[in-house]
Length: 264
Image (cartoon, rainbow, N blue to C red):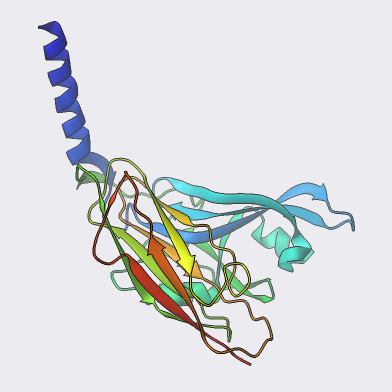
């Protein structure tokens, strides 16, 4: 009897967790993906230049920054001079062209975030600092907690292309969007394959073949950043195909393509 009672209590507790969690609503709970951070490690490369820790990940309201990729490089590889490194050290930045593109996403995707008016040269193109509105430390703001419904069962994954056209001119990024049918109490990692006439890491910047959708959220983005290779080519395509997994189910929309226009 004691064992049955215990299992019932545990089951009810799990249902409560699955259906309702404390999170932050509206702009609270928002996430901005693809944000980068450069931090001076204090170490020097063989030429006496600074070595930076490079993080790329998502800036979450209420949770702060969660890195998905971390590595160390010479600042010169990003074309970051010493004065720029001082200005952006340990700050969150985004390419200006990407911010401009993201600002056109319907539904107020960037409503919880703000960009600096100043720009900073990284990789030879302008970047802006990104912070949370109403926050000086970028780790949270004054959003109040409310109840958000969390679905149970396996999430259904859908793919779309809010920006299907990329270009070497600019360059202009393309963007895939991966959505769950509803928030889940646990994070969801969605894997995918990339194919098409454009090659990962050669025709566009390397893309990791999975994304993390944090608990309580529903979307993640895969940006395709063209590499201007100075070669005369026809337009190329990148096709993303979401892979099956035991942790989610697939909708009928799991394959999409982005076109990369050449500028030669």
